[in-house]
Length: 358
View 1 (cartoon, rainbow, N blue to C red):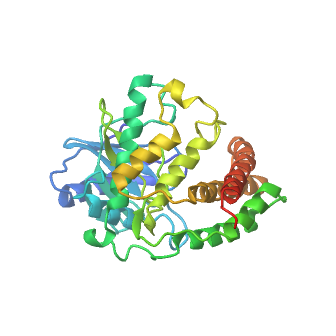
View 2 (cartoon, helix red, strand yellow):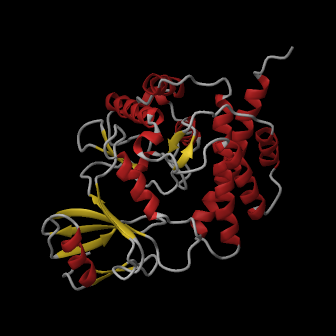
């Protein structure tokens, strides 16, 4: 979307506005060498925090803001996103450079931050159809390496010791998502009931405190334009303190899901044929990068994320039944909920069956 500096740019998905007449002078005063005139265009997609490309005389930038309206107190926390990426700027974990955080709501209506625009590639399909089979392994190796860097990071060393509650992360997450699932439950799903039962009796070892991204998936990674190198991890809205296995287990679980349009997993694709590492090989690379040892209850970590995803998709289904979600997304989400619950139950029962009995 183009326009002159005085134009308001509309967010057609939510009515949000960027008043460039107020924004451009503010950025010229507060953001280094920023110079107008400028235009703004909203990135497509369903980001809960609307995100805009700002093209100015001095270059390209990205603005990420809270949506307008009444919000839950802890939701859409762009302030936290800015803080964590600012802290990571001098570490081996790749993030965009941070420009500024503005909490003055008179500029664009809600708090926002501005960061560097990363000129790179974002892949939406984990099968990486735009790459050759020979190249795909290198890209997955890079993902494992960066996950390892995130696991090795000491949050206290970068000023993030108070970034969240430490200890019992997984237990608290299970309790939270059981509550969320019960609130959106529409019919009894036997696989989900069995999965919840297994998870309720699980006691994971997660003593190490680490920074958790919370939504570490392929389309939140920006790769170099031509190299298998990640230049930025995006969308830190769900980040907190937790345990390092959370992000890698989430990434692996999402790859196990089928390809139904609501989410793109790898499902039954032959990974060897298309040049994508088997999960065991990917985890081996992660272990080498992170220095961690994979626990004996790895299947339960995967089962936990299958459960969490099933609970999320159940919420989409209920919102559709109440008239608050698109029918296409809701139908696919409802189908994926059943699949995710079945996957989680299978993983949990495989773990139980492999426990030695005296």
